[in-house]
Amino acid sequence: MTQHRAEHRARQHASNTRGIEATSIASDRPFPRHAHDSYGLGLLDRGAHRTWSPVGRVEAVAGDVITVNPEEMHDGAPVADGGRAWRMLYFDPDLVGDIAGEDGRQTLEIARPVLRDPDLRAGLETLFGRVTREGSEPLAVEEAVARVFMVVRARHSAEGPPRGASAPSVARARQRLDDDPGSPASLRELAEAAGVSRFQLVRGFARDLGVTPHAYLMQRRVRVAQRLISRGAPLARVAAEAGFADQSHMSRAFARQLGVTPARYRDAVTSPARCNILQDA
Image 1 (cartoon, helix red, strand yellow):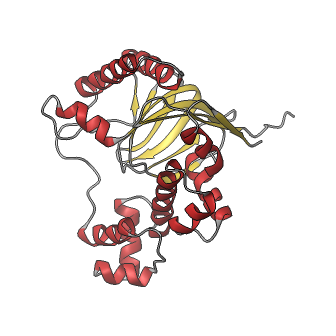
Image 2 (cartoon, rainbow, N blue to C red):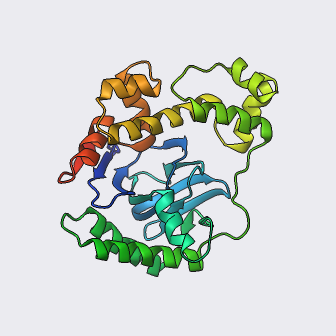
């Protein structure tokens, strides 16, 4: 009997373009529900991937494009032994907003978390190479970005208001966590701010966001850590300012959500000439 060997390799690529991050991951690990503050467009290169999304549970197979909107909850797990491999590009909403705004659109929402579009995939292949290649001409990168979002806008943008609106009580508690993720929070405090019972608040978070208040807080702290790391702050100070008990707690939460450690992330985003790999067997 052959025993399956665990796999997890994650690379945070150095990006030559402000507002775009690039990662590549080969892993058989599941990722917990989380959200990003950016748009994500990715290429599933090997295996198959199952994810929970606002439109229900969906599956992607090699050759598909995988997507996520800002603040959109999702998770991810391999469909079978052997894991899966994918590459992602994350786009700052301001960058995407500038592109959409040129055609009179205020916002852009990608309609589906899995897309089967050879033209879009080819455009993402080109863009990924240009964003991660040292010495790429800025005009060539900008053109590749524009071409990708031309296809997204024309074929895969949702009509109507964005999904994911929260009940007022959940929105109030969520705002408290968004405003000050670095400070301690109790369920009683959040429930009182929301004007509901603690049980109602936990149910409301699960219904509207797909996660518990604590899991949501951990995500916000990881995002704070990302921003501070990208500005060059020392990791020990990042952990304290983001609200983690210590640096090891931050490292575990960071790697669980993003697949890479804070140190590897720092090396990629603060050293443009370098790409870094974190591998755990």
